[in-house]
Length: 490
Image 1 (cartoon, rainbow, N blue to C red):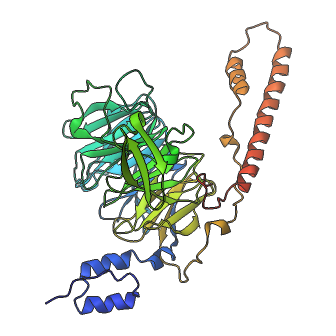
Image 2: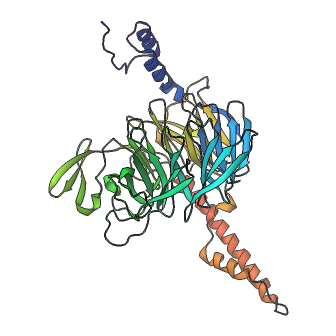
Image 3: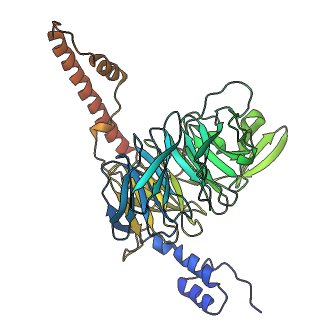
């Protein structure tokens, strides 16, 4: 009679191999555990750089087989790569009129159907033809930038989009139709008018594709059951089935959500700007309307208490991941490993951060960009990672280093000297107004001496703004590292 398998948490890899040989560890389980070994994470290094784009690379992703990488960029192009050799399999113009924010393969289409969204608010589909060309078609639009798409697991036809207009749309490629499901609003109740949430992220629970999570310019990550939505497009409001937020961030208008991800176990990973990353267990939310009658308080141990209608309800405190900096851009967050054993995120310091999921232990911080890392996507089968950011290339990371990286504490990381880029400084309001005013050409006969004086003032304003930006960059370097315990990790 076969003995029951036990989790060999403290065993060495050779011991697990012996267990597999005598039948106490199933071969498939052994393979998955070996692929998730922490030793592989500590040996990650750059395998190859893919540098054919001419603008920032805003999206990367692997196909189901893992042999092809897709990328989209500010140059409005979509490229398909043989990432191992660095060869471009094909490239085409996305059809968008602005920066491509996301590009994804639809499942079970032999990589011939690609959906994209962009800063122009459009959602498009590209059909790869037998001759290698790609025909793109407009499916729907948002009133504002469309940041993310969510593909229904296992479906070659169904996906969703979200945008800065707060709108969530459903797409069916069998009919090439878009259905406006609902607008996500700041108020969690239907009564009264409320402004919409600028949505940055959307994701689907892989174990229950009816559950859709969205997040944006609001501290709450909201999970909706699409079966309860009106499919005729007549609803301007939808009640979430659950809401997730760390207790100390409820009511904090200074934070918002930039990235979301569901794990294989239906855990929800939430990345906040100007804050940390939090992992919520399945069914660990605060309910559909935590602000109406709930009071959240911390308690000892791993529980937080919610008092609603006089009754105490206990919720697990989310696991927190600290050390990175998320202030300047919309960054995603990802699980890596065959069973989602690790959490990964980019940072404003140009590094990739990796933590152990179960306890939040910081493992790696790898130099990934001259300025900011925005995207990290795992390979579907192996410990391989694709990353991108402000640089015009995609970096592929494989566990090929001969020596393991040294284990560091977050406090040991040194600030990086970042290259100042004039195109990134924030123009003061008076300069913007002045530039707009000066677009009017002087009429014939007008005195140009005043124009010369105005142009001198305009140049002075530009130089002052650039100086302020350089000073800001220098001050950022002094704040790059958090102590690892505060709620505002840098």
